[in-house]
Structure formats: structure tokens, C-alpha cells
Amino acid sequence: MNFKLGHSVNQQVSLTKEKGVELFVKREDKIHPFVSGNKYRKLKYNFFEAREKGFNTLLTFGGAFSNHIAAVASAGKLLGFKTIGVIRGNELEDKVFENETLSFAKQNGMQFKFVSREDYRNKTSEAFLSGLKKEFNEFYLIPEGGTNNLAIKGCEEILTEADKEFDYICCTVGTGGTISGLINCSKLSQQVLGFPALKGDFLQQDISKFVTNTNWSLINNYHFGGYAKINEELVTFINQFKKINNIPLDPVYTGKMMFGIFDLINKDYFKKDSKILAIHTGGLQGIKGMNSVLKNKNLSIIE
Ligand SMILES: *Cc1c(COP(=O)(O)O)cnc(C)c1O
Image 1: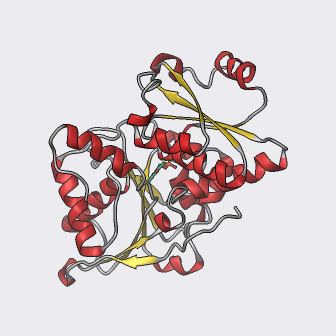
Image 2: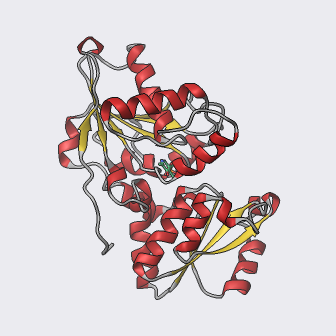
């Protein structure tokens, strides 16, 4: 995509010697302030495809705090596409400016269609899609979370030749698109570990559809009760991690993964002397919105 991109570098995380492993973070969050991390990777070839096929409008789906919605709005504006966001739940319809992510998307020109949670569940049905076509005419459809074959192709570009020195590649999992790309471009001698940010056992199957390698597994113990659910322990961890390593983590995805990696290191899960690479998939735009929720509940915030 032809807008200014930052550099994704591998940054070492400070660990005490006796842990016996080394941990690095691939700073995909540095790629762009709003089209960050895996969202850039997932959108790249979809934007190419949309342009090649002559579309000037993109339509996609997401919740009110979605990094994907923010990324599509921002990239759409930068690249000259009209964008439409179909938003789960209609409670914010008249209060868009109370929500950080939606206000941001609106400022970037995204038009919204709010739908009830029930209708949202049927968003991939023929009936729902033909309703959208009637309402908005021609558009290029990007699925919820952006996961499709072109997204996975983009995520296959995350690992570089130099990354083959790592024994473990860790990443957080939402819909499974990012980890699928990582699995496809990993060496078979590497283990790819996914840390789901939500509860549910459909992910194993979803990922299996996109990959042939078997050098991967999901670690399901660090979702903190479900999608976007957090607690004081996680917030404290995120704040400490940033203070020590100068790497911000988001509370929905990367914070949970890193909490999990630290816990596994402490439990000697990883082979001795191994090198671990954790992918920072971005998502930092979500911190403001989460902090508003935390403040309302009088809880400590992410610094
Ligand atoms: C969307 C997102 C994910 C989830 O990626 P999937 O490809 O859906 O698994 C992970 N991390 C961050 C920061 C995200 O915004």
C-alpha cells in the first residue's frame, strides 16, 4: 500500500538469566498508528484486489471496539476508498462520539450501519447480504476480522528469512487468519503457538482449513474469561511490561499473549536455551476505549 509505513523490528524483552530462554517481540505495531500490525498485513492484498476489480467502496463488519473497523476506515481514507462498517449492536447508533473507535472511524469517513446482535449473527446469509447490496450498491466485501485467503497471503509476509533462528513463534488469535499465515511461512522445525483471546473450540478447525503444516498448537489458558474481558492482574502486567521494556501491549490481544508467554516461561514450558519470537499484532488504538470502561468502573487504567 502506498502510504508511509514504519519498521517492524525484533526487540528483545528483558528476562533474568536463570529463565534459560530468550524472548523477542516483532514490533508489527510500528507499521502504522491505525492500520497497525496484522490489520495492515490482512488488508494489503484485499485493497489491491478491490482496486484491481474497480471497486471504490469497501464494506466490512465489526464490534464497536474493533481494531479491524479502525484499520479499514483509516486505510480506506488514505487510499481513496469509501468505507461502510456494519456494526454489531445498535446501542451506539445515536452516541457514536461516546466510543473512541467509532468516532475515529467516522472521522475517517466511514459510514455505519448498526444492526441488532441477532441480525449480526446472520450477517453472512444470502438474505442479509442481498439487503446490503440493495442499500449500498456495489462494494468489495471484507469479512469480519478481515480473514480470507488474501489476508492469509499478507500474513505469510510477517516472518523474514532472519526469523528462522527462532524455535518458537507466538501470536494471539482472534479469527485465526494471522496464525494461519504464520504457520504457512514457518519452518517445520519451528513451533507456532497461538494464544486465543476468546473462549471457544471452533478455532482449531478454522485454522486447519487454511494450513497444511502441523507444527502448531493453541494454548487456551490465557483468554481471561473471554473476548475483551480483562482483570486487574492483566492491567498490572501490561503496565509493568511497558515500564521495563518500553513496549506497549493492548488489553484484548497482545497483553494476554505476553502474560501467557511469561507464565509458560516461569513454568519451564519452553525447551532450555530456546529463542522465542512473539508477534506484536498491534491493536493499540483500543487502549483508550478500554480505559474509558475501566475509569467508569473505578479500576486502574492502562498507562
Ligand atoms: C484483530 C487482531 C488479532 C486477531 O487476528 P486474527 O487474524 O483474527 O486471529 C490479533 N491481535 C490484534 C492486535 C488484533 O487487532
